[in-house]
Structures are given as structure tokens and as C-alpha cells.
Length: 306
Image 1 (cartoon, rainbow, N blue to C red):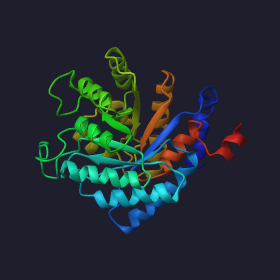
Image 2 (image 1 turned 90 degrees about the vertical axis):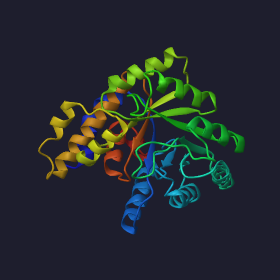
Image 3 (image 1 turned 90 degrees about the horizontal axis):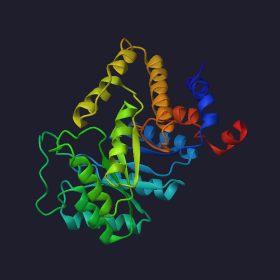
């Protein structure tokens, strides 16, 4: 039985009870021709799901600036999707970054994901560029001086490894939203209670903007562990157990990964969450299957199911 059919069965009962959630997808700039073919095949596969937007990441040190720009402008011009480039504070002066924003505006791009950015490879600590924007809140203000961009920012339901104190994340998020950001997308997580507690803290702090959970379909478990260690995301022992012994069994890994993500999103839906951002890692299979099970389907399939 195909992956799509299995996850369809997993999600059928819940999808009848739930409405169609809003989704967005994240891609990253490919490093070679084969990876580029995979990216565009994934874009083509996911486009009919009509995501709210698709974002394209930016290298930790700004190293993918040109590739990010090329992918974003191609998506914007050759598909029906709304493209949202990541833009960071690292490796460039204020005027260089604002020039990039002006160029995006001229190409019809109105949505930007504004981030502080990570230290360059080999660097252990973030140091603001001498003539650049120091932090994401400064970048948001700068972007708003260029045009009325729709701006998404990042937030962490678990403390960022560099957070100086417990309330820092809430204070920082509120500052970015007050500066003009429209929504926050969370780092990935696997315990839905973490997100719900963070959402409650945001509400108590007077934050009314959408807090969109970031969902990571697990394509390769060791890679996910490394990513989690870098960003401070916890990995439950139960999740480790579910993937144990599957290093040489990709088919079962995909089925488990789909089930994990579907369960996670459905648990969040039970608490009123209606928007999700998927970190696709440029692969469409899992994200498409998960969305299908969650009632996010192409218009033709939706009509047939109705």
C-alpha cells in the first residue's frame, strides 16, 4: 500500500471533523544541479496545495544570497505561489540589505522572513556586523522603511541556546511584532504541549499576532538530531524509540515520520491551531502526504472527497 493511502486512512476521521488548515512551506537553495531538480520537482508537487506562502532560506553567513534571490524571483514569476525570501542581519551593511529589499520589492515580492541569522560556519558566537542591522527587530524596522512588506519573524517555544534569561524570547518577540512584523513562525518542536504553553505565555504578555508552529517531517533521524542540538529543540525519548532500528529501512521511516507529524498537527488542531509551517528540506513526499491526511488537498481531490 502506498504512503499516501496509509496516511490518508490515518487522517480520514480527523479530517472530516476539522476544517482545512492554512499551510506554508520552507525550501532552501540547492547546492548542485541534482538538488536543484529535486527542489523544483517539490515546488511543482506542492503548488496545487495552495499554501499561504513559501519561504526560501538564507545561508548562515549570507553565503546563499544570490541563489536565494534567484529561486525566490523564479517562484514569484513562474508559479502561482507567493514567495517569501529569508533575509538576515549577517554579513552585510544596512544599505546592502536595504538594497536587497528594494530589489525584491521591484520584483513584486511583498513578503519577507526577517531573521537575525546565525554566526558564520566555524563561529561560536553571533557578533553584529559593524555597519549592519544588529538584530531582527532592527531589520524589521529597516524593511518597513523600504515598503509595506508583510514580515514574518522567528520565535522559539523552547529557550534559544543564546537566550540570556527566561523572559527574553517573549520580550524579543514582542519587540519584533511592535516594529511591524505580522506573525511569528516557531522553531520546530515535537511536544505539542511546549507550543501550547508558549502560546499561552504570548497571550498573557499581550501578544495577539499569529504564532505559527513550525513542523519538521523527519526525513533522516540523525540529521534531525544535529539540527535539534544546534537550535535547542528537545527530542522526546518516545520519538527516539519510534525510530530506533530503522537506519536501513527507509520505507518504514517514512511511514513513522508521516504518522508522527500527523499526530502532532492533529493534537494542535484540537487546541484551535489553524496554521502550520512545514520545513520540507526540499522534499515533497512527506509534506504532501501529511497535508493530504490533514485535509489540505488540491481542489479536484477536495471536491471528490466532498
